[in-house]
Length: 62
Image (cartoon, rainbow, N blue to C red; front, side, top):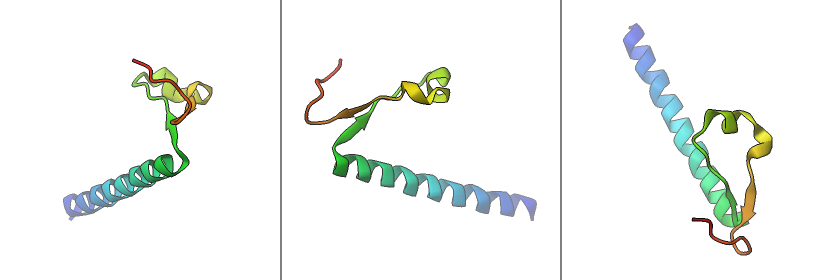
């Protein structure tokens, strides 16, 4: 029974994450903004380091 409940909770969390990510993508396309991404944990913890760029005016960074 415990395994079954864990599976249900895992699926509910996965559905929530998919919906949340889809909503973030849709809002980003509608507002025409891009948020800088870094896989570094320290950058994730420091909220001030997350920069937002306008898609139409910001130059492409390679």
